[in-house]
Image 1 (spheres, rainbow, N blue to C red):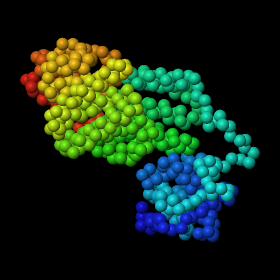
Image 2 (image 1 turned 180 degrees about the vertical axis):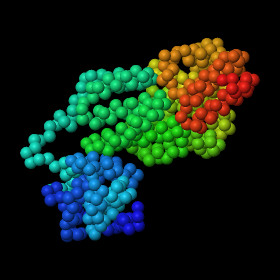
Image 3 (image 1 turned 180 degrees about the horizontal axis):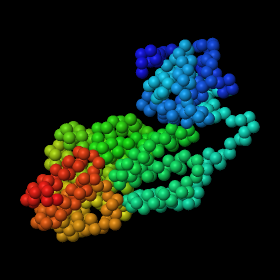
Image 4 (image 1 turned 30 degrees about the vertical axis):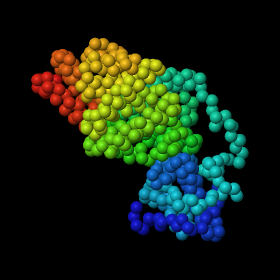
Length: 501
């Protein structure tokens, strides 16, 4: 912003302002503080659009409105010209409302409302204080002979086929059957009611969740764009807009952490959310805490910081607590598994006392038991990855791990880690393509290391070949280098050249 157009700082101690917006003459009257009327045909509707966006969590410095978003809110304007915006904002310069509309560039945006000055303002429309309905009426004044709106338009019934397909998608998603869930969502899309923005965004949210779990980052980016555009459209209920906005931030952070390997950026995005708000959605709060703990764990490992390690464990323990108290089995098994894996990794890096590593086994078996009781994660390899990792770190033989598992009433299948891994890999053979490349890579390398420890070097070499193949599909360069390094180390231990695979 150039110095000559920068709005002045607001004075919180200044007297209150009463502003009347008139939809007939399209003028703005700042009340007794400035007796003259500000004549600009765009300004009243521009203010109404920004006030409505502000009530929906936008038009704020942390989340400003683009020129395109304002154009959509103004509805009947084919294009919001830069000259129009310049003149509208210039009309405020000689009034007590100067600086109310802040901007990156006066004619191009983005735009937001000054919180201090806004707190001083009271808005009137047709002699009454304005609310959401008044802002909408000012933005889109109905014709004089327009019929009264029907309540069925705001509480539209959903088609039976849409609800049925959506429920099938939710069931498949809960069971980890991600491609069947995608198919069901495609069927639901065919029956989604036209013009029903909440129904459309609910589909996009589910598609984004599936893309995140598949590691399909290109599709996730596309769905994130769809969600952002949907939030910029008028007519979305305030509470629903806020909840979708929170989910959007969490999904964006997942993209940074999982796709780009940028854990610090993911934490910066999560810092924009308020845990008190997220408490209204227990499942979302658990997802938020889990992601914050996992990103913090990665940063702790990079910095070799015991303080960051403890902070990450606190977040993961808080996620487990919320999932347990809210009675969410799927979230509970995920949280227990994440806590177990973090304890294992952080203790292996020397950031925790030795006894904390052994503690991981109990949390992992808790996750296994929840999965067994509720029929969850039948086609996931994550728990197997964590099991093999903990056993390797603790130096347990299969008999020692079996003894500990039987003590908890959860005996392990097979007679060796090699056979256990083979059985679980075979159990999800139909869905191998649904597993993210990173998960496949980590599993195959752990399987190979246990096969080598148990004396089957040929099996280990074949598994390393497969792991290197999947590792090349990883998007983040840091992940590719890490898994390639592990594969080369294992090949060296097997006495094979790196080119062998």
